[in-house]
Length: 215
Image 1: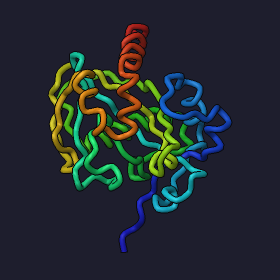
Image 2: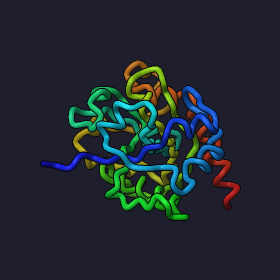
Image 3: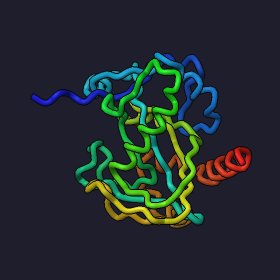
């Protein structure tokens, strides 16, 4: 008998302590400091996490852009979250599992998390170019059953080129699209992608400004 998938979660009350919100929020630093405090996050069986809104499954949601266009794809029938099949998305990522070697009480847990995100993305697409990575937003959507038990950590990867190819069968109709083109297919976007689409300009500016400060 196959062992049940374990997923990374945070208790809802932790978010409530910092400040519960609906939709997308760009003021992420105060939340990240709390989330990545050693011992705050834990693993639990996915079936339990899906049914218990007292916990939020942590989902990295990686938006990739190059030359003003954003990677977009349609979730195929093999998508891990069956409730999202057929929807277009601009975010790549998934659940973080214990197999990602996540030492929850390690002082360098944030760096370990970033490495796990890279591995999650690599399962779905092959990024064959250099890029910068910045966490630009958090996503919380209480309006539907999927959103109530998930918390999205939105990463913005600015790619040096558009050399990205798919690895996973669930990734279909992949293409780089302008914000205007994405607006034209807005009705086909999953909820998280619609929320991100409305803030693409703000998130891109945030990433570019932070990268300038680093330099």
